[in-house]
Length: 168
Image (cartoon, rainbow, N blue to C red; front, top):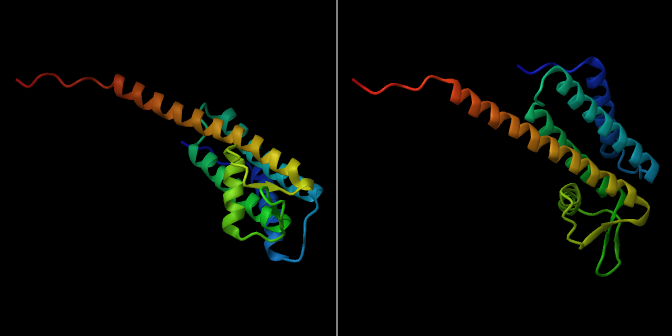
């Protein structure tokens, strides 16, 4: 049975999402690296707090919470990259407002720490991209651990059920 999140966890998550959505609602606002890092840190702490609270209340983190956290992080970072721009590494050209597809591609590559090298964050936003990569390490590891717990529990539950005897 999944435990419900505390009001503080919901408030932290709502603040992180609201801060990120401000980038969409106010399209002329260009976040500074400090603002972007603050939004990321708030989102990271809210999601990490929710996961840690879940671990404290239950030995297994609900995979749905982790998957939602990962999807939210990737999408919100893509919105940030659309705002702050990206740099095409082979030409050095700075794309100030990349299309959502390019920003999403860069966000997924950063989160998964693949780093093909065709796009890079603008110099003043490298710390934000590095933070997203660390975020990816943490939450992909949590997802793997949660799935392992589910598989182990399913296997042990199957082993505990009495085997059917031979038909007579």
